[in-house]
Image (cartoon, rainbow, N blue to C red; front, side, top):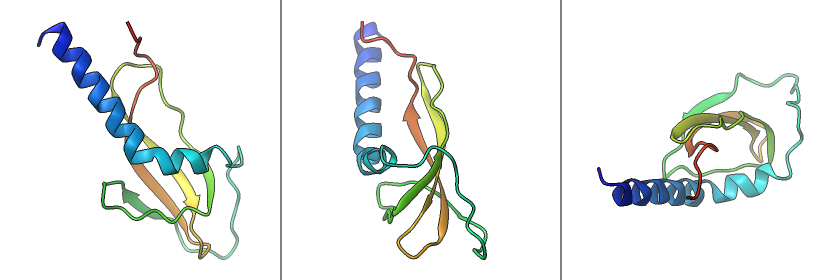
Length: 101
């Protein structure tokens, strides 16, 4: 793959990650730093994010760190929906290790 094609693929992957998670990131900026314990709740619902996933995020409880690598990596977000049910969302983001040069 040519360097130009590699840069294009990286830009497209970043754009997809940003579009897919823009609402999640906006909510995460307001999140508490530490997870909270919810007494009397069932086990969290674990789901994998797709473009058709409807997100009902009332409160972000925790998010995994994004590693300093230049590739797509799996991350998790634990959140509470508007009904108080806990969820764990698995999704993909571009690592923080890519340079813009």
